[in-house]
Image (cartoon, rainbow, N blue to C red; front, side, top):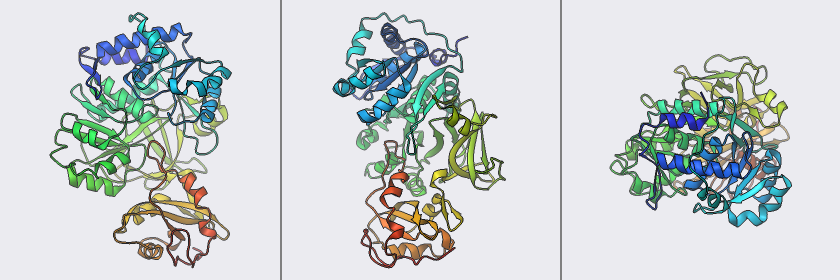
Length: 523
């Protein structure tokens, strides 16, 4: 029996006439229509020379046709490679050159800038715009719709997703049909998705969250999704009266909290709010519950594994945690140096194992061997601990660990205390080079404006809350933290931008306009 994701998906659908996707304009695409149109698109792909195992690189705007292209690629036995729509031609050149796709699908408006890159990699180029128009859909329109989905094994590649590449070259995570199927089915059960659900889909589809979590889980449930082109708080608020689920990044929820109309009445029809891709502030969790009566469900995943843990659907959704391991997924915490498993409650490297874990990095055997153990555990790069109830707490990325004067400082621990100070909206704690300590703990703070904050006031507030070596040597105030498209705070950019902080006059004025910081002392 074929393990092609599309074959497993079609066997999950109990009502082919039900709506799979609807658009803001009112278009409704049933599961039968989705199958028919993906068949036409799969014929178009094979007609363009795409063979099983070939990569299909895609940099297009979000649309129904883009979802159909994803399904068609799987049906043709090829490997789907989504690319961030914000990538520049220089960035695209790396991905296309590394993946060597047989086909490159791009927006017609970008075709002129990208044609040479596509040609250099030996990829054929076709186009698809935000309205679903282009040379690819023209080819699909003329094709028959009775495509016989190619059989695939569970270990065959279904997708190739490149990591964000904040350090070094971006790595292509090889995800199999088995990886994607197992995670979709696990999440369907964990979040109790049914055919009666209607998802507000406002996420991009070039990322795991929007493509494999939001889209796959909805389709595997026979549910429906409202495919929004982008996040718009007003539109989302207006849809909550008939929708049942929203998946988003923390920014979605903070911006929705700015909407005066957000309350228990407007969210009464909703059964589930899910947040991921970046840490959700405990304050956001509390404020959302107070305003709506709903507790946001936070989960934890990554490109290489899809989802690993989730706060429970029925049970305590604990703010500041990412919940419990999903069924079939093992999570352990190990010593970053030795790899030995640590005792419960100790902070170390999070490792995961399960059917959701990727096959390795594309054409990077050394990286694969370094991060994917022979016993199947993947070294996530995230530091965390598991409490006595089994809930996983993320304390930061391994590369974000600060070593100051020989002591380890976990940024999230410091951030959690800073975020509780009145007048602080959110914070990011980083380590910057320091001549005496190696690294100095530095806090980047976004103030609310009321009450007014000073650097000395923030540091004074931490004096009784944190050991001296954990307290920031400097506090810098900013209007907002730099984030990527999925809402993740980009600490690598801040480490570069504020590298001056520890070297500046610690007792005088600095760029933030605040004064009188803490005097450095050895821990």
